[in-house]
Structures are given as structure tokens and as C-alpha cells.
Amino acid sequence: MAPTGTTIDDVKAVLVSVLGIEDRAATIDAGTQLLGNLPELDSMAVLELVAALEERFGVTIDDDEVTADVFDTLKSLAALIDSKL
Image 1 (cartoon, rainbow, N blue to C red):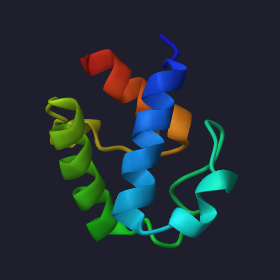
Image 2 (image 1 turned 90 degrees about the horizontal axis):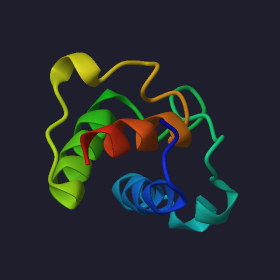
Image 3 (image 1 turned 90 degrees about the vertical axis):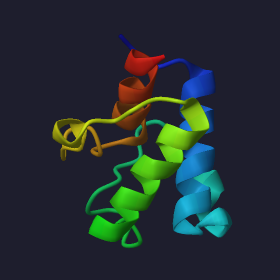
Image 4 (image 1 turned 180 degrees about the vertical axis):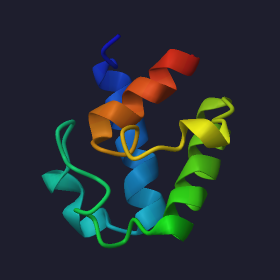
């Protein structure tokens, strides 16, 4: 199931806030590669991002769902959130 535009926008807002990259927010879209592309997204930032997404959306992200595939693009991360709503 493809994520909705609203979910993508909401996940992007959390991502930008957690990573402190407001100055580059306009360059991030659904196809933006996350892991390996955003230097701020290190292992600690992934944990912070997961916690922030859980709080924002009222979902639980299991440890086994925190994979490179899920964190590949903004779209793939939003799809995980959509699947939990």
C-alpha cells in the first residue's frame, strides 16, 4: 500500500525536526534516500526518529521493523507508518 501524501508530509516534518535540517526541508521529497544520504541520520538519530514517529502517530514500531529497507526513502518510511494507522 502506497503512503498518502499527508503521511509523507507528516513523516517529513518529524524527520526534519529530529535531524535539525530545516534549512534543507524543501529538498526532501518522497523519493529522497535517507540512510547513507543524510549524514545526520546515524544510528542514534534512527532511534530518536523512531521514538518521535511513535509519539507523533501513536504507533509502535517493533525492533525488527527498523531495517535498511524501511529507512531507504521517505516514501518507504511513510509506508511503514501508514501500515500501522
